[in-house]
Image (cartoon, rainbow, N blue to C red):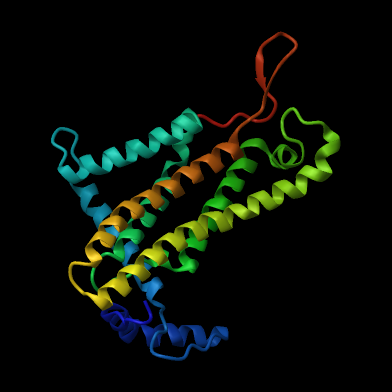
Length: 266
C-alpha cells in the first residue's frame, strides 16, 4: 500500500519507470513522481510472470503414469471448476473453462499475495477488481450473442420466457440496470473484502508486530479463497443465464429449442 512503500515496487520503477514514462509521453500522458508504475500493477505483472513460469514448468513435467503432487493438485482444481461449469451450464460448459479457471486462479493468487511480507494484494485495488468484473461481463454477453444470436439475446432482456410482450418497455430498462449492477457487485465485493482485510492487518502489525496479526492473516486465507470461489461461481451463473436457450414443444410433441443451441464442447 502507498503508506508502506514496497521494495519490489521501487525496484521495478527504478528499472522500468523511465521507459514507461518515455513511452507514455508521446501519447499525451505525463507521469510525475517515482511511482510511474503503480504498486497494484507491479503485483499484477508478478502474478502473470509467476503463473506463466509455473505453467511452463508443469507442462514440461506432465505425466500420465506418474503425475507429481503439483500436477495432481492442478488437475483436481481444473476438475472442480469443470464440474461447476457442467452442473450449471451442461456438457457445453467445458468451453468456458479457460477463461473462468484462469480468472479464478488470478484472483486467488492476488488475494493471497497480501499475506506475503513485502507484497500486496492487487485485488485490494478497485482498478484490478473492476477489470476482472468487466472482463467476465463482456465475455458472457459476447457468448450469449454468439449462442442465441443478436435478436434472440436482446429479446430475452425485454420479454422473459412466459411473460407477455406488452411488459417489454418496463422489463428492458430493469434488465439493463440489473446487468450493469453486476459489474459493481463483482468488483466492489472483492475489493471491499480484500482491502478491508489488508487494512486491518497493517493496523494490527503497526501496533503489535508479531502474534496479534496472525489470527487475521489466518482469516485472510479463508476469505481469500472464499472470495475467489464466489467470483467464479457468479461468473458461471451469469454465463448460464446468457447461453441458456428457451425450449418449447413443437407440433409433433417434441422438445425443440426456440433459438440456437449451444454447440457441444469439443
